[in-house]
Length: 237
Image (tube, rainbow, N blue to C red; front, side, top):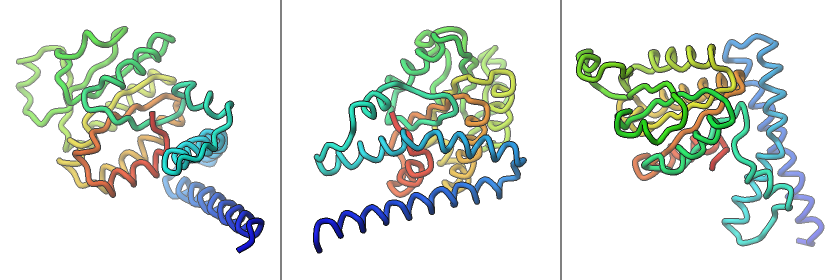
């Protein structure tokens, strides 16, 4: 195949995939019960993310092929840190990568919330400010007597977890949230249920212009489940 023909075939295929993705996103929004105003806000925000998504795609291609595609401006954009309204996946078993990013956001003046699998008393001193802590644990109600002042949510109660996060987002727009224990949630629910829950949570974070950090131990999840999360969220640190 002539080089020019190969280029234009690739170009038109990429154009087609982009249009399909855009319409799939719009169709997805219309089936979630949002008002027309909320759909407009979500659509505009998604449109503003295009340049970053393209830069991420180029970075992945560069990593896989060794061919450098990123422009200087795109490298700067990827290195510029977290952006309001975004959800990020981080490969991080012990919060060593996640906490510094969280602290940097808190240092800028936003409020923070930490839903953690690790008991808060073991990690609280690593956080700046006074973030709101919730312990993700499968336990009974007497935990409150044993550890006063520590809120907790069962991993099997996604409804209560949603309520906890929604309350924070309502009083703290532009806030930052850590959700540790995604693997733990999957273990106590099925993956599809958790995946749909993350999709809804991602949209709520977008509308409130907050940031959600999802530290992930990829060795504890099925590779196809990790791929589904990466395709949905598309933003990694």
